[in-house]
Image (cartoon, rainbow, N blue to C red; front, side, top):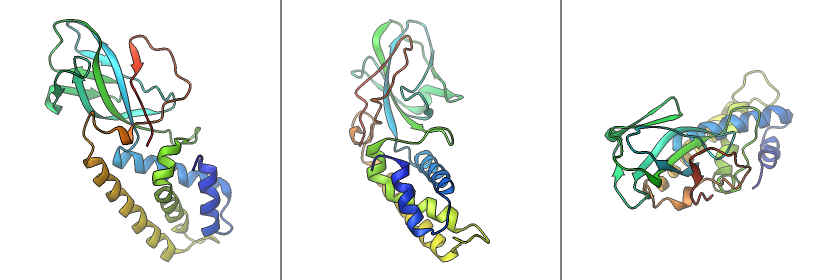
Length: 211
């Protein structure tokens, strides 16, 4: 599965007479909600450690994505200690604040795993790995959204309830899978960031992969 358009055609089979635009919009909502709730779309970021600096501005290499959760932080280029959640804070989906400033500078000395989400409008989600793995969940949620609409030709409360259960089960399954992949071992859930990168000082993208 490579696009929301492919999923949309499957949604329309279930929801006869539902306009394609509404199907795509429902899929965008479904993808964003699923990824926000599970943290399944992940990316590795590497920054230079700066002596006596605690704050670092983070940015996803996927230009349209937003970082909304930090999964793990490691200092000293991945060979040092994983920080626990009490040793850093994350502000405004942008700033990582370390509790203690590093004593020495180190190139690529700060390694993070972050969860990212796509925008709700404007850009379709195109990560084929995530779409392949969880496309049926996105399809189920999109159908649930539209079938639950009242007084529409495609309204179907029973179908909406059925598909919501299917979607909720997929959320649980995803969380179980993710619970078995800790920071630095979760290669199966790295984001596909082989897209157009922007040039950001001090930022490199470390081995980001898709499922």
